[in-house]
Length: 315
Ligand code: FAQ
View 1 (cartoon, rainbow, N blue to C red):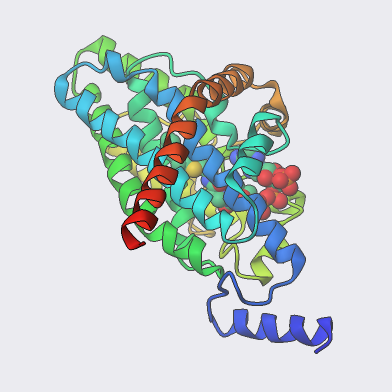
View 2: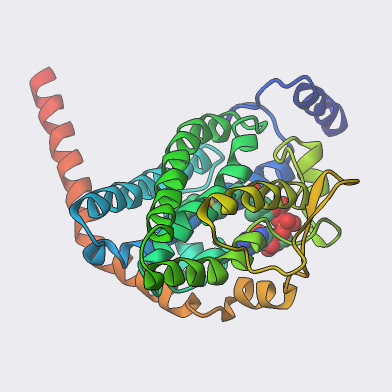
């Protein structure tokens, strides 16, 4: 069969909603796009542990500490499912980590912002996990089987994360003036970076068109961003707080909220390594990787020992 015929059959399968599995034929560009997206997604989950991990020892009660600890552990699990899904496409975990550590692979812009106060943990849960869910629920129907299946569990856990974040903000919003101010300040700082998480606007997104055709993406960046803004504009009313956008206004004709200008210059600065915490995040990742070397060596030695014992018993 010619490559053209294979490509037609492949697209036909995608159009019929038949999942693509690792051993199926796929266009090289489809494989590369998935490796890029899934590994970036995995890196985001792992780097995403850092801003929150920062607050585990300072959470205001045992209940909050336990919930935050569980959440951060969940993010590690998400990273691991995603690395495993990417590995089925023929890239090793070592290669992916090397790309993260040498700066050639991206991770979500959002994790390059600092967590300055306890309320930031609430804002991350509500807004960052909220944005992640908006993006990831459609990924449960993405065309590549292992990625779609990994997303089902991830989304269930993210949904718990989002609620714990909202509940932190709700508690603070019913507290004293200082607590209310802290909650509002966290929302002010996390709102626009969360809106940017969905990626560049559609006419500046080089990958969207092809990824939509291959059903890797089910909605464009702007479509998901608008859904997110519509949901948050309603939810913030329950908190009695505000989103920091003077232009946020319901548009009856569009059936959506209009919103203010996004600072795309800030977005690209952060994506290209010049955000407030890019250096700190990568340094922390590299340090953790280096210091974990002995754990990886011990795990391999243990696996080898177990295998040897099993062969001896069998013999
Ligand atoms: N940050 O053409 P597009 C989470 C890059 S998980 C950095 O639109 P695409 C859980 C993009 O890679 C959050 N870079 O690209 C959690 C591309 O660069 P390249 C992560 C970004 O792939 C919560 C270039 O810009 N979620 O939060 C960003 O079609 C709380 C052009 O962009 C996922 O990764 C960005 N925000 O669409 C954890 C979901 N946006 O590689 C802890 C899966 C774009 O061509 C605590 N990924 N870029 O040089 C996706 O859905 C897509 O990859 C998009 C980008 C929508 C992110």
